[in-house]
Amino acid sequence: MTDHLSSELLIDYLRRELPPQDDALVHVHLDTCTACRREYEVEASLTEALRAAAAREEVEFPSLVAARVWEEIRNAKPSPLARIAALWRPLVALPVAAALVFAVFLVGPMSHSGPKIAASYYLEEHAAQQAQNPLTERGPAASHFIETSALDSDTSTELADEADYGVAATGVIDAVR
Amino acid sequence: MGAPRTRIEPPTPEQAAFLERAMTQYGKATYNFAYRLTGNESDARDLAQDAFIRVYKAWRSFQPGTSFLSWIYRIVTNLYRDELRRRKGRFQEEIPEDNAPQEFGGQRPLAVTPIEDYVERQLSEPLSLALAQLSSEQRQVVLLADIEEYSYQEIAEIMGCSIGTVRSRLHRARALLRRLVERAQKES
Image (cartoon, rainbow over all chains, first blue to last red; front, side, top):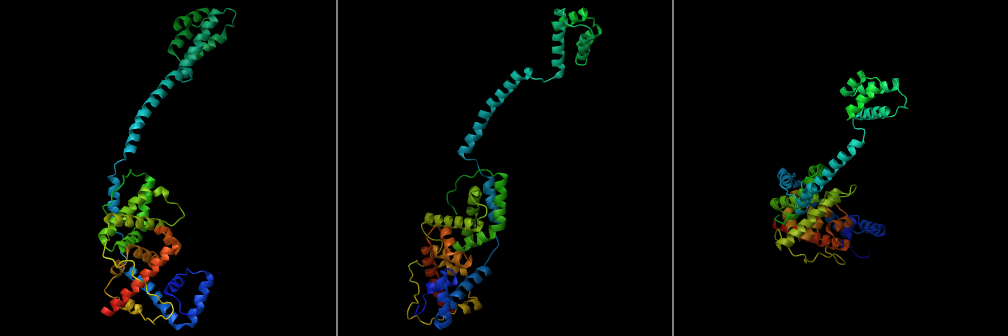
């Protein structure tokens, strides 16, 4: 750096883009060289002029642009791929829904979906078994089961009124049949 | 800007919110950048519109924590370049890029370019007209370097070129601007 600095170097210095060592050398040179100092000030002034002019000419974002962007999006039509996907959805969803309904239909009766039906069914079956097996314990227990089932079924209520061991058991079997 | 558009999908709520925020916060900067690039309002509006549509489509590719402005400037720069290619011309008359820059190595003239006077007197020639006389690449680099104050590295990333190219374009552009200012000074 025995001669004057190039404008390129001054611009890089102005923009703080020089490596530290070069930056320091330019800094020292500008302290001693009036011509380069003047040239540097011209470059700095150009930058200032550009920024000042840009600030003066700055304009607001036109609302029209935002409106046009939203309009374009609003009027957007799905791509062919998206349309195929939309068509594919019911094609897949319908069979899946049908399979689910069928599965519920099959599994439903096996689950304890309703205590009313299940209780009366098991109770009646139990009573029938009791009737067929004379060695089984009889008495208040059987009566109790029938009374319990009366909470769930009108038919069972009628049977409970008739509860008298074998008579009641016969009635239950009839009712089941 | 008349460029062929790719299809747009209807928005998700997140996507719509992202776009709304982008336009609210960065619409002004984006539009001004586009205006300085194109030199006229009509093209600037189209360019800004296309840029935000691109933002809308590619919103998931934006990485949180990075500069949104750098991202959208890159989008604007690419769209502008594509549009120039599509038009196979320029938005305005420009002086070819091979204008020799002023060299001040060795016996440099003690040039006293009255930039300060230019600023103080606010010559009638607005910045957009002065910039219009640069090549599109020179104009982009001046806008990004001197007005938006990006580093060479950032400009290289935005423009998709090397740092060396950024430097040489900026040096040439500034040399040309200085000559334009001198000419304007003499004519006034």
